[in-house]
Image (cartoon, rainbow, N blue to C red; front, top):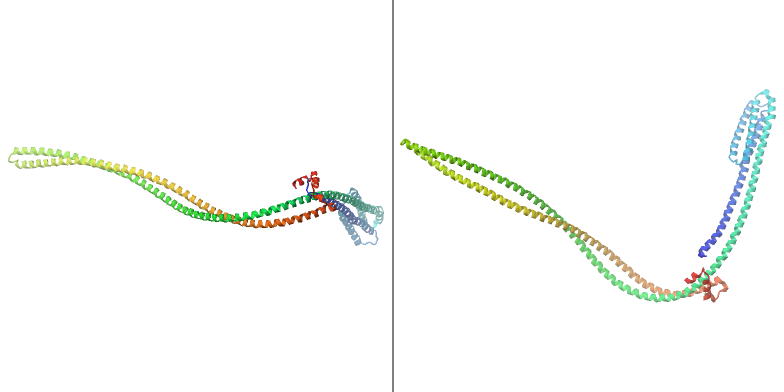
Length: 547
């Protein structure tokens, strides 16, 4: 058997309880069935008998009412009243019939009741005929014959049918009573047998369990003796360990005090780091803001460069327009130069005419002397005009050359300036782009620095919290060390008390052995012979090995 004592006791009492429950269930079942049978008997005697009596009384009332129709001095109002009375009797009969039919179960009872209904209907029909004949004065002989030949036999048949049904109800009630008595006797026999079996089973289980308990308690008492000796030895060891624990707790408390001071210094350094991290975060945010604004300024400068580039393009266009204007001026000067050629031709023609006039004046002599002076003056003017025309032509040629030279010089210088400006512009754009790129890197790095500073601040805060927890834990450990010292002192005292309790335990074991074995107790109960007996038993060998 591998079950515990508790399980075995529970199973034993469970078996006994099952027998008791069986007895209770059997008693309840027997009582219920007996009560059911008696209830059926009471219903038969109460309702069915009452209804049968009502049926019989209805037959008696119907016979009395029908016979009253044969009275010679019966008034018309009395006859009407008797007819109404017959109708009331029939109505009551139908009501009783409905109540009776609801409880009819057996076919035999149904057949008896149908015979009763048949005779009742025959009797009611004869009574109605008697009622009809009573209204005819000349039908007295027919009335008497109907009374003797029809109504009398019908009434008698109805009375016999009701008597048979009454007898059937009484017989059925007697049968139910006999069944109830038989069932009660059977239930009593079964209950008696169950109680007897339960008593025998409980007795057997009690003997088996008591023997097993005695065996196990003997082994327990033996193990308790060994345990008491071991506890005594352990109590001495605990006393020694408690003293060593006291010394170790004192040293631990001192070390924890030093550690607590170091943790406080670490907490101060972490707080300082947290402040610096917060300051770094603020500076990083400011740098990020300034870098962002610098990036915006450089982008605005690039926009200005683009505008300057556009202005230089406009200036180049203007320069090309001025060059065209210079070309127009040169063209005009050349046109003026061409006009001087015309003047030279006119001067030549004028000098030729002046010479021809002088020749003609010389031919004319004294008469042409005045004309000769005029011709001479015209010649002089023509010469002067020719000289002026030559000077103008020379000046115009020089002006055309100077205008071309100036235009080319201006164009070259402006081109050089525009090219230099474009080179400077491209260089400025490149530098501005580098500035934007650098500022973007600064913004990105500032964000990283800001994030890192925030993480450092959070880490420092977490470290500060952890240092506080460490300090709190050290405080608890220090407190626990003090408690350990107190516990060690208490354990030392407890070990002394435990030694005293061991002696008390040995005395209690002796009382336990006396309780188990009575006067058969002896010193051999704690000997190796006792142990060898348990070792031979496969069930108790594990307990001995554990002991």
